[in-house]
Image 1: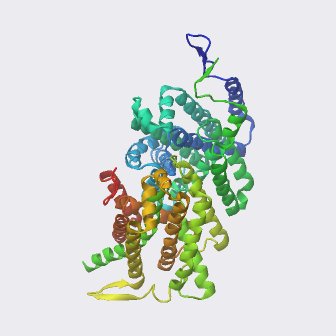
Image 2 (image 1 turned 90 degrees about the vertical axis):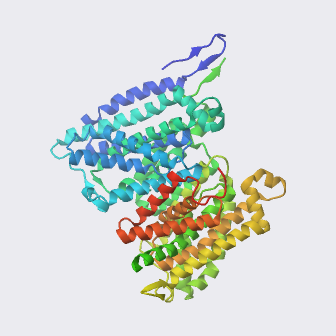
Image 3 (image 1 turned 90 degrees about the horizontal axis):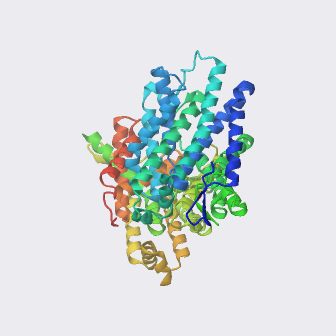
Length: 336
Length: 289
């Protein structure tokens, strides 16, 4: 994706692609092909693990878009994980739709729910916005817990997959997960390289200054919120397609938030590489250490606190400043 | 009819407890624009400290407050001075992540020490006793004491904020912390005092909560949300507003529970959303937009 266009003076170039980004494109393409062939050779537990990782990665990318670029620190995105998950159940179990088609529809449903939700939470700023999003997620949770058709507080199982051959089921789930991984990264990357992304980063740096330059701050934030809702809806639906069992606490519970925030903060806020590294790191840590239960969570909490205080730009922030590597350049840089 | 009056009365009393959760949040936000995500977990932490003191020293729960309040103040002061002050700035993200991290740490430490079993603090008869008001109406001693404590603490807060040297420093820092520093206010100390007082109040609130109901290590987040809703319903910048917000939330939940036990908390949330939609500055705001 070489789009280094020269300006009239010819001595100064606007750099929009780097060596690392060209390498990333090639590695990404090879990785995509190799991964896409996985259902033909990998065992089902590996496929399931990848799907789980995909959910985490999509959430991390979307939260980063919201918090790292949009400046909206939400601890209530589980509202949309839950909406996505329950949309899958309702469309699949009750309406009998193709379970795999339900995934994009779940994203749409979550995006639609993000519209009224934004009308409420956008009335709060900063820290209160964060807790407001959480309170709204609780409303979703309690409301769904009162609906007996979906099992109330104890939840229900996803039955729409019965009758689909095991290989087809696993492969389709995996390919959707793969598409979600590459799709979410591409979405954030292309979005940030566009005019919209320029407006968004301007808003992050100063709302007042960007408003004075003619950027519609509220509208831009609104779209970021809706897109993030869409992404979290997809991730939620995919997660429960992989797990086949849903309950209001599992879907709308606040336990999602520390996980998502941990991935983004540790990896590096405000970069595309950061959430990717954070998701990989969290995924590995959770597989290795989750047996330690409470101590593992205490360590995660401590790590988040220490990283925020000492290394506010996370792992990728450190790499970027040390070696000037940019795999997903979203900025425009002037070069002689 | 009488039973509805009873429901509302219980709600008002419960609201006193929510006001106690909320007042510290309100103070911390007012002085530093800091939102403490771990506030509810501090409620549960002080409740468990109270539980241990009552259990080991065999003292009355109210006597235990004499120990727990200074201890809670110390914890708040130390956490602010050692950790939180470094996160204060234009960007709300660092303070949110750090207090969220503290929340996870407190919850899991309590879980590790006390397991997930529910406990409550024995109140020595206060939690079951009540005064008859006639016509079959009665009000429990504990709810009444809770409401009285909330009323008194709110009054003291408002007076303190308006009439003392430290209160003036709080207001000055709240308006413009740089200008306050210029005229000799030690911001770091003011911040630490504010959080110390905010968590100190939870020494009272936590023990009252632990006597009122059973508690377990994971109960903090719910208390945070109730306190937060009380602040938003009441409107920012006024302690009496926060108090009123707590009472409104308590009454809403109480009515909700009366109609259907599954709806109680939800009705409280609905009142919060309604206020946010129609009066985003809260019902009794003091600060202008």
